[in-house]
Length: 326
Image (cartoon, rainbow, N blue to C red):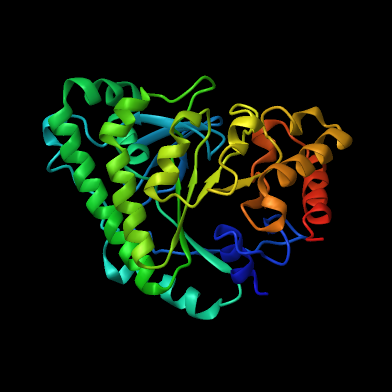
């Protein structure tokens, strides 16, 4: 089987020949990345002084941070809520920006090719208003914030169409919806305001025969059934313990989980036996006896979470050794 077929069979519970994986070398990844042209849209990080950096992103949000790649929005692009219908959005639905996508997809027919969106509605809108103000807008300025949401969704649907027409296998999105305790907003409010938007984007992807992969940090357990219902095919959870493995296992066979060994509590032990045991446990709980439903992953920023690369190599090695159909 090609990597493309292994991942698709995993997502469709159709018996891949081995565990699908997205791991560092020497194990390698079954997934590939679909590029898109952001030329002229993102200013990159610029040094302000020895410790501080600044970044103007493609949406017009000003970031500040330490170290040149981490930070938070200090000024959102949408300063006045009444400008929600006119604030400029980046031209990411311009077909010319997808020439590189088409070229890459024509060249790589081996891997399962994933096109990354810049988020769904929440991840984008909350930065344009800053999170604190945005949470108030959801209640105090519903009409204006929904105008912004609609414009963002139209842009995202255009991106999904372009990726689908180029031949991508999936779209992915980063949507950090959770805290350590639960969803950032009441689940009923999420279902009212955001669930239909998720459904629209998932439906658009599925019309192009693309899968939908969604990452979220935090405990979003309450809406997992909703995400499955609207068509999310894979949930990328770096922290499994925050949900509880028993809670996640309820949905094994209904959705695929793509996970590293838990980055919040298990990798940090630095204990080889503990790390390897957790890798095997994830396979046992989620891989459905080899039918599919689990993709082994590795976290890309060990230094940011205080993890030695060797600890994650133990996890990767165990995923590969245990991810063999018997």
